[in-house]
Length: 357
Image 1 (cartoon, rainbow, N blue to C red):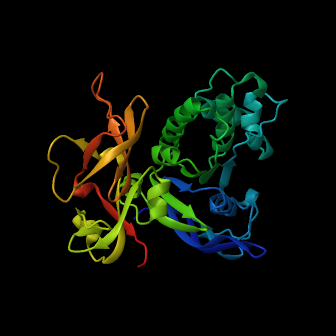
Image 2 (tube, rainbow, N blue to C red):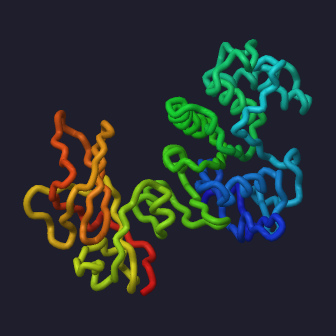
Image 3 (tube, helix red, strand yellow):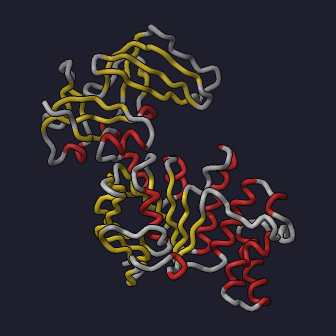
């Protein structure tokens, strides 16, 4: 069993009558890349700030390893934080920015120089030691902030939307860089983001948060393929949700269609549900489609986006979105008004809670 670096036990944070974080408990294993994902106001940043010591919990405990740090200030916790704003000292060189914390701790000059050099090499900024922050790009400044946090060798590194200020291309590049750096140093990273692609690219485990609670906790594949709630299904990508009653391994939709579902999803469930199927798992079928895993419909609109053509199809069970991969040159596009059959593998479906009758 792996050692736990961060443990939250029944943590709640209230601001007056507003409950920002509501009775959260979780464990983050040592050496993992853990993400807290959710929309604005879901409590993810407040949770991170309680781990870092910038907020005190109203109730519950925050532990680093076996030590209860709930009442300790940030400087007495073995954590460092990287914020979206880089907070670099503009008048100091890059090496002095990175080594600032070591100098404050009284680390000898020779050791300080060695550790700063190692940290800058880790973030691919060797040779930039004498430059000032204004001479670097936004991405490079973010790397400096990361090196400054890592040079102290904290037990846990907290990342509060660290890539939010970067453009899309640079953000994607930095996602891969952060993952590489985390794997090299082996330090536990706890990352807050509202970007599901960012969380899924980097994290081993993701806590999807909603209204101050953890809606679902799991690995990227598990959360995407088997979301347990409509919120998780909708927040991690696009989902088609078809309402109906579960009956003997199939969902009976409002028009009477029987749509087969994955056996493991149906196990132990009954009543009103919503059958989920991701747009990229739906094929526009030629000829007869498999019984129980298809619906006929009419193309309402489409958008060609390069890697795929996105369709909106009106069907008797509701609007269905389809992402058709453009794998061949000059692929045929089904025009609005075209009758099509949509088909999928029942094993690609999932179930979430349904509407009450």
